[in-house]
Length: 187
Image (spheres, rainbow, N blue to C red):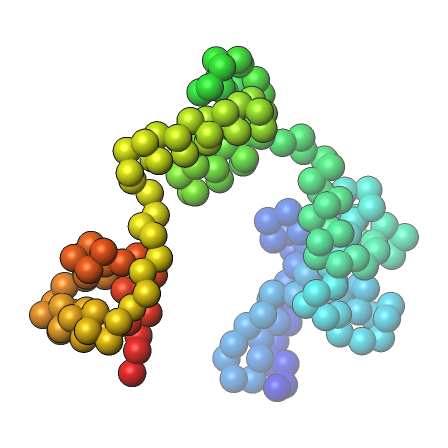
């Protein structure tokens, strides 16, 4: 691919960059800090190679201020600069108030729909034991694994053909959803 036009270096967000136009009409953004490092190494940088500004001034693109590091090292380096966002929470088991990383709370409560928050493993264990006892007492929870007979498999296939979903088939036959899905996937 031939380069047809190169713009002047200018500020591009927090970096100094320029547009480079190719003969097929495409353009790419070329960052000055990567350009400087490529000239020094006399090769193109890999996508996995990041160029870090040692003094954290992204406009200072002198070689003495630049170093090549991996993406994970780069993320770790910048994570040191900003402390994690903390939120105050109350333990649902004992009521103690404590601080947690906001990322942890969002991940556990909002994304994974986990119980809590808990102040520690002890309170989480107490809550889980109580829930386990309640499930055993109420007879709820995971149904016992049933050995599938050919008759059950035929019935399940017919139920699937009739438009029933996996939970319905499992409930009607007294088998786990996993077993119902296995039957559904059988050739």
